[in-house]
Amino acid sequence: MVNIDDFVKRLEIILDYYGLNASSFADKIGVQRSSMSHLLSGRNKPSLDFVMKILDVFPEVDLYWILIGKGNFPKLENEKISDFKISDSPILSKENYSGDNLFSQLNDHAEKTIKNLKETKSSNFGSEEDEIEKIVIFYKNGTFKAYVP
Image (cartoon, rainbow, N blue to C red; front, side):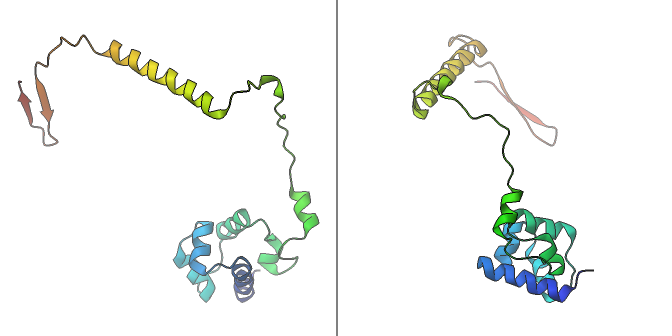
């Protein structure tokens, strides 16, 4: 069982370590400031969601340390290395490298987009000789007004 007073002391150690106050810590982990205040005052117990948010945002915090005081804070270096996962994604080779820079690729893409927009605009609308026959405005109360130019 989690001792609330000890949990609060460990939470204050985390705040001091990162140089945060209670409200900025609450904002950082994505909880309401009032819930942080209630925890620090001892009014509420920490929820599992609260503890998991701490662990997600601050990976240096050890689960057993924050809950029952066993372990170390911050985590030891060898524990951090064991948590590191190597990506299975392949490394990009230079075979597909075109030599262009990012901006030239963006310019090419922008030009294609503009050309497509012009083609779409011309196909959606008739010739410029078309004239507006009537404009109808519908209101939320069910009424409408029609304007003839």
